[in-house]
Length: 186
Image (cartoon, rainbow, N blue to C red; front, side):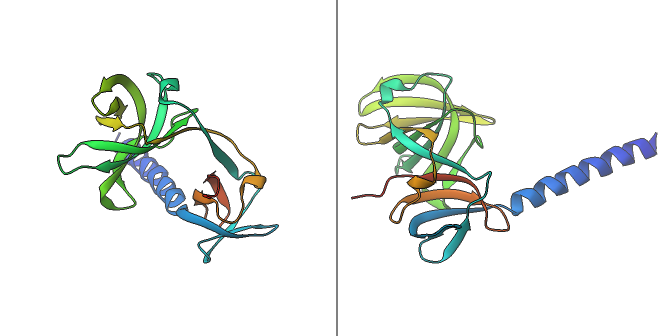
């Protein structure tokens, strides 16, 4: 009986170690594409990113806030006000849940990232307020008319141009896993 528990414990520890290694092997990169070549592109003039056969590229297509419904999965970048309320400046709809969570954005205390499911939409004084639910909690986030709202659609290599903002994950060999690319700003 004890050896069975020990085997189960060792197996669980091995699975956690492998999952941890896989996560550590991924790197997140945010910035601007500064150069493009046949093998990939450079971000902010310093980070080389390679493209592989399985590199996924997504591109934002603008939508209206009224297009968002309860039950949909969103990623919301917000500013945190002095009173603790959250005001969205970017709302992205995804076709499936992706890394549900709520926490600081890029290590900043004044900005948050909430990846969660919409559970309620109500009219508020300064726009609409979304209630977002994820494992372990929920957040109410105000969405003013000035917020950028989009849905993620499949993109392709033609979207990867100098001046385009990107948010991506890449593996230990610098091969892009998933690239979110936006149009260059005028």
